Structure formats: structure tokens, C-alpha cells
Length: 253
View (cartoon, rainbow, N blue to C red):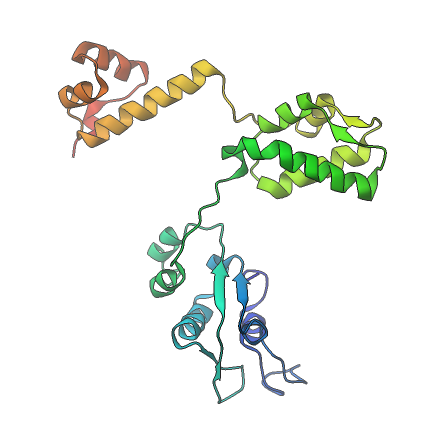
């Protein structure tokens, strides 16, 4: 975890150090790059790595050699690097908190993992698995979770993603007095949670607003062209803009 350690300790953890390299370095230490030689190293929260250490990581990725802290010799390594972050690295580059050259060196294959609220179909199987695991640890009498409870979970917002879902399931499993976790137990655990699946009318209105904004953006505020793309006459299109509080002038360049 690149955000969990101070810079000097993280450098030592990644690249190793020699005996006496710094106060407390009583023994030689092999870093994670050496330990992962011939395999894979996962760098979590890469966006939180200090900028000065980013330079050293970039050098390792380019030269495929590491230099332990306190050493004058370089050691060749053959490591596949996988990194992850919760930050917007493109914005971080604009703010000069993440190096652009390192970003492009790492960003060879990019996998975007949508937040849990955008993939509610994943919630039931995850919830069943977490119930099974939590029951083994805390409450063997619990055997399953009801379909109504799963529906409540699928409609909730999950700002903490899978970890939050696991925490909620562990809590209701530990406190359950019945073999099947009920929807009422989930409602109590999610008392302050907002729902992310809107009703049909609200969802349609939100889609309309985003669609209108998109066609106005494409046509740079030209209502005639936007209405033609939308398959509506100008009068109807203006009514839709008024309904959603949109002004064509806001989209003119």
C-alpha cells in the first residue's frame, strides 16, 4: 500500500536497504522488487505515492534495475507491475501531484472497475458469500439471506463499495436471531443509506436531461440542429429544455 508508509520506509520496502543505511537498519533487507523477481508486484494506491519516490519508481520501470537504499550497486529485476488507485490520476497530473511520465509508463493496460452502485447485479452473489463467511465466524445458526433482503441491498448506495457491503453483512449476521437474514434487518443496518435505483419516472427524467445536454453540446447550442438529431420539432424541443431548466445559450462556444 503506497499510501500507508512514510516515504523512507516505502522506499526501503520496495527497493530494500543495506545494513546501516539509516538509523534502525541493523540488517540487510531485500525489497519487494527483489522478492517479486520473475513474478508480479501489486502496488496499491499508487496515486498516494510521494512524488520524489515516483521518480525512483519510474527509473526502475525504465531500466529494470533497482538500487537498495545505501547501496552503490544496481540489481537487475524482471517484475510485472500492476497498480491501482482510487484517485483521478489525470487530474493529479494537472495538479502536479503525479508524474505524467510515470502515468504513461504504468498505463499500458487500463482496467476500470466501476463502483458497486453501478453494478447492482454483483451484490446478491457477493452478499450470499459474505453471509456464508460471517456465519462461520460469528453465528453458525444463520444459513442464508432472504430474496427481499437482497433486493434492499441491490437498491442501496455503496460509497464504501465491497468493503462496506461486507461490513453490513457481517453486522447483520452476527446480530441475527433467525436462520434467514430478513429485509427488516438490512433496513435497520442501512437506515442512513440513500437508494441508488430511482423510480421509472425519475430515471426517465434524468435520462432526458442528460440526453438534451449532450445534443446541445454536440451542436454547440444550435437548437435547430439539436432538434433534428433528437427527432423533435423546435417547439417540442424548447418545451423539453424548459422542462429540465436548460438554456441553449449555455452551450454556445
